[in-house]
Length: 257
Ligand SMILES: NC(=O)c1ccc[n+]([C@@H]2O[C@H](COP(=O)([O-])OP(=O)(O)OC[C@H]3O[C@@H](n4cnc5c(N)ncnc54)[C@H](OP(=O)(O)O)[C@@H]3O)[C@@H](O)[C@H]2O)c1
Image 1 (cartoon, rainbow, N blue to C red):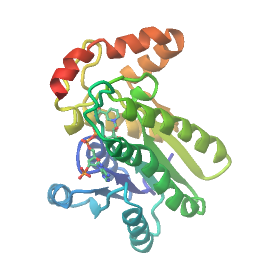
Image 2: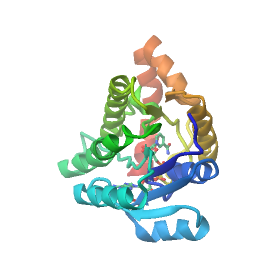
Image 3: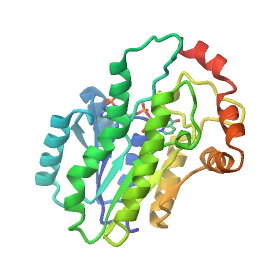
């Protein structure tokens, strides 16, 4: 896929993987726009990277998404690529019940419903473009559940399945559907997590370089490093895969207590 003619919206572009994608893609694409909830974080990014455009938007708010869509449709009618990256990662213990059901619903809304809502707004315009693209950021945990983050893993597995259906339905159109399934990456989301044997935290800028290479080569499902191993192990030895991901749960529980 050609990147030079792309005007790109990245959700959750104010830190971690989204920011790394924004920095790297701004060197390749026509324009990169990022959104996030916290305006101070966005303004700070804008100070450091003035080439990026910023929009405040909570992707789990129907009205915020509608306003952002209308604003961008007016100001950037050439917008032709969406990267659904914004996400949160929460631990829940079914035994301790230290959560309310609303916490689970909020996580589902951000990690699963929002990408579908954004696609619902932008896809009709994208279908009129000569070439457009959607990238959904899932996770290696879409293939093997980490039991302490049950909702997160379920949303990523759901988004993976949705992405495959979307790609299949749109296969004869000008809209290309990509999925990036990152392994464990060093970002604010994972800062409390220790490196685990076999699961070293990867660098977000390296992941961004992998994304760009994959987009240029039309690699529709990108599973870098440990994500690829999890994908294969899940198919060959499903219970071994689940055991491997969950073997350090006790240590993790202490970290997130
Ligand atoms: N880090 C990893 O190991 C890893 C591995 C696999 C997959 N992923 C996925 O990669 C994506 C990015 O994760 P990350 O590690 O870069 O996390 P991060 O550093 O915590 O960044 C998350 C970004 O999403 C934004 N965000 C969160 N909720 C939002 C909402 N409701 N509306 C708009 N923006 C929102 C945050 O900004 P505000 O807080 O200001 O809104 C921030 O810009 C997520 O989808 C995550 O599931 C991460």
